[in-house]
Image: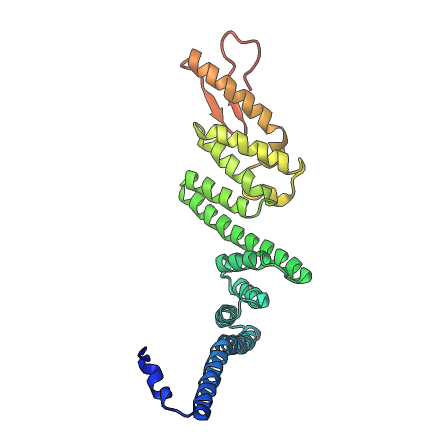
Length: 269
């Protein structure tokens, strides 16, 4: 005779009606456990959503009170608890922008704009806020570039002005400023100066607004419209002149000018 497994031995001696009752109770218990297991994640998700709502409410109060650091933290915590609500991320970005935390604001605005199903009106606002954030970052970088230039480190100043321009490409004056400094540096920087001046003239109107001339000397900005061709010709002439005539010199001013060379029919300018 086949031996019963230990867990069934206790049931073997029960009467049929008691055995059936035990089985039904066991089945009912397993159903209850299974149901509780299935409902637990759903209940946890509901609790998280409630927590997120509470955090967002406190964040909104902090925003109204002007405590942007606390508001940003609250909205970020709310979004962490309920990532299905994009407005929490939007709120965090707005608080970070208002608190001058521009790097974080830019990252969260871009993340918000990439989410599916975002409200079109709010998406349009986010684009505007992102432009403002990039503009603010550009301002800070331009200020840093000016300080570097004042210290006399022109190479680093050029890099900083270009970075400021890339953050806000519509600010053509930053590109022009970098190009003018490169032209002053001369040497290997001259080719880059020409390229940046060409980019500037391609992007900016010939009657550039006053802010594009900020920080430039004399009428250099007004002359930029016709400066590229003169610089290109002068550089080419200077290269040829230096190869053939050791004593010829090119002077760097508001535009590159070269002395008239022996045997030439016209000034090299």
